[in-house]
Length: 141
Image 1 (tube, rainbow, N blue to C red):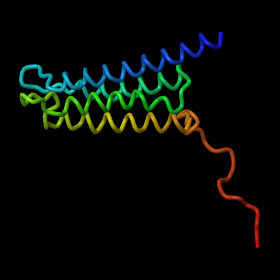
Image 2: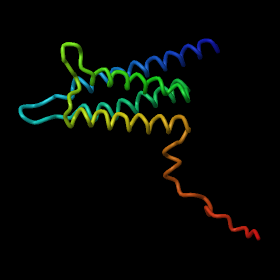
Image 3: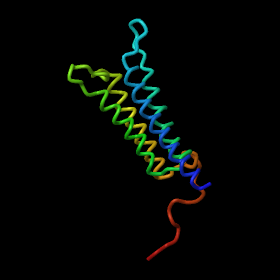
Image 4: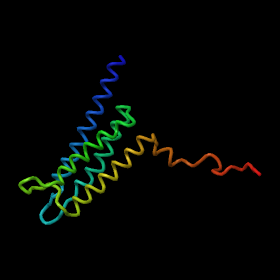
């Protein structure tokens, strides 16, 4: 039973890493999406939601605390490769506002999700009011 649990946790980490890599590929190739002359930045939504979901999946389902860095590294590697020109001069993430926003929003969402997972911060507890005074009322002289 313990061995099965270990393999399920490893499988969850691999699924989260593959998901983050897929988010990176999908966001990169959907960056130039247009409908007529109108730019559709659907990749921005994909990258924010996908990155947070991949990191949370690794943390909640896999039970990993520091293992959440693996999906983050997979997304970062895919994004760096998409932004690098090939020997023929082809580049997937060109220098436009959508590509720049993909890198900025994706990195920010990953950083926030990783920090929340590593520190085990629950967002629901942050919204609750504190139960007592934040400053000690005891006098010390």
